[in-house]
Image (cartoon, rainbow over all chains, first blue to last red; front, side, top):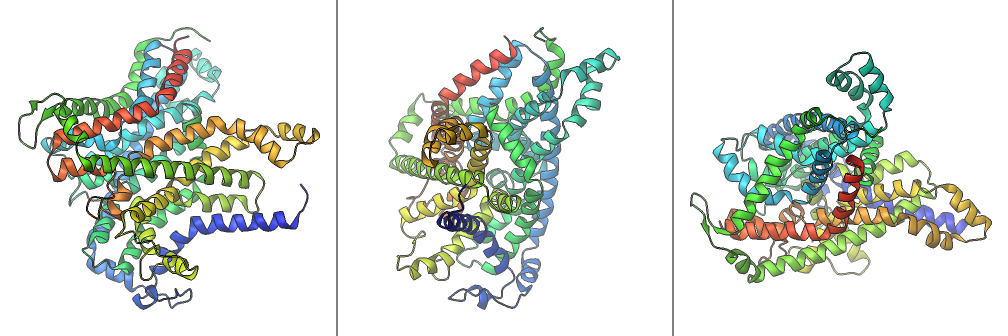
Length: 276
Length: 293
């Protein structure tokens, strides 16, 4: 490529625009969470200010619910991730290694099911969950979050397990290993990358999800996003500083996780969409 | 290795996934279809009413408002995402400094919850102190009155949606662009093809499948848009910014009209199926070719 100065300038500009677009909204709330009210509401905006923890202290004092919500989010995310990854890995093994008409139909069914919008199933599930006494429990969200990712998870796992040579299974079978042994001792360890990719999807989804938490939890199992939504809705009296502090706490761990797991996220997204 | 495998162990391995999906999504979806043909409310036995719910929903001006809003937002969001995602994929493919860091920055919105994103964009466009409002004012442009003017509200919802979902479209297109062999470009250069000709003759045609997949997924997911609207405008002012999922939610959980909500739900399902018809047909053939040749 020729080193054309105009070209370089345009490209630098494009990169800066992309960076600003992606990061300014995030940086704004993280920085503002350390601002006192007079700095938050300064016009024109202040980029230098004395950092303060007043918003975090106020959050702790007045929104104890939020920290309970974080704990709930953590429990639900962990539960949904374990369930979804295990179920997807086992099914992915079957779709990678077995051939049968029934599997063709059921694989099609798995993808077909992704077309049904989550809000549609809340209509019958709401009374059923109530009737089972599962309303406002961790369990109901764990099941829902896992369910809405097992079909994508299975596809991703199949793609990863397809890359493990079949000769490895066959050699183990010749040595007398059962299918379960092959699955748990050979395939799962070898497809750890795929399991991480599936886990990244489920973790991000379960940590951030709003709709199901909004419909199925009220007090005990309330998740962090739901508490933040209550803070937004606090009639006309939105306390921006406290809201920024809560958003920052909810956001930073998952942001760090996505940055660290970037490679797996990209691998999972491409495996999940190009194949099926 | 094309021998048939035994069915029973395979069924055992797929049964957890199939049970989850069947019991939590499929059976309830069928039940919603039954609900859509009945008149019912909490604690009442459903009475069969045929297509009356569909007729009532289709005669409700608020349904049409929600449908039009949904279609507008989906069309804006998906196509702007596709253009921006394509531009960014090409930018990254042309070689950028600090690639891993830039990639992390671009993927960052993927980690942000809808709730936090609403906090960000509401504050950016706060009428008094928002950064974006001040930037618009500095450029001599009018502010976005998203809380008062319905169309402005939908613009802000679209912006927010694009911001949240651009990483997905970008990753799909970027991966597809990287999969194009470099030899094609080298050969084109030997033949004297310039940058634009290379884009038109090589990049664009080879990216079409990935673009279609990214668009399809985004059409389907954007169509169920709920949280962004609910948290940004709540469907207001005066129900003017409702989208279909918000309309459904209000019918069911505020107005207790389960039949109407169920009918709306099935209209959503049918719309998704129609959108995905070509994809489903291709997939159906592919699945049977793989598993039962």
